[in-house]
Length: 292
Image (tube, rainbow, N blue to C red; front, side):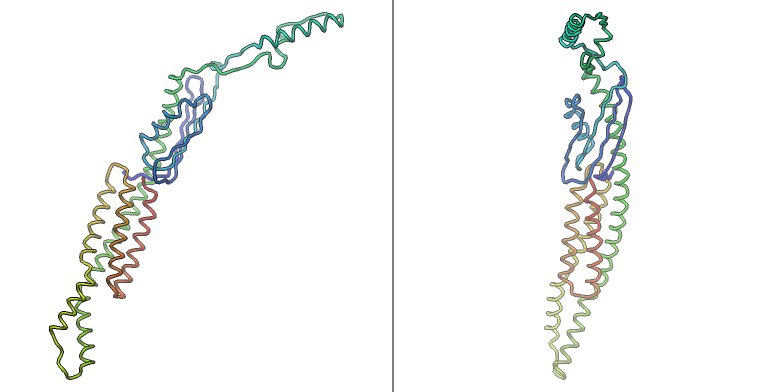
């Protein structure tokens, strides 16, 4: 399976009175890079979430965002600030005594004073919270990987089409190259006739020059390796593992062979084909930068 390094996944659920949401997004990166944004109360989950993501992702810059909100009173504890309440009571008693007023103080009255009552989150059951967050994170991760797979299928189709184009171009180069030595020999023979006139041409010397030219410009090894690299490319595209780095190396080899052919052959037709060949290889190189 070919996976893109770019992707997005989101999931949410209401579990044990908590609204839990997890978002995952990623962009290209040379290695696996992870960052997260978590509520302060969930910081103890950071390593667990990183390990969960790393079990499914090997390359790419991944960012995880977790939000957890209480939607019931189950996670809320109301506490009394006793020193402050006693201070308010003492102040009201003093006020009533000095101003000769009836002191009709009630608990409800004290509770309305600022900061007498406070709401705090109840201590979370860490095991339960992790199980709930893990469940939602797994759903987000499934959606995230599914999107990467869809993008990967598109990349694979594009690269496969360009591999077909490369094979076709290599075939045309081989065809044009086949008559190159013969054309060079005929051209050399005609040139020597023009220069020597009626004098005889040394056939052995002519054959030697043709052989030297053939040796210097032979591209059989390069075209054979190009065919081999294309076959390896197709095999790698079918692997059920991260393949981006392997394809990156193989793309460099494709480019190396095309450069060698271009430097050996000065034929205009072959040079044109080499330019097209390198263009296809460059397009493949751009695409595989997105592959995990």
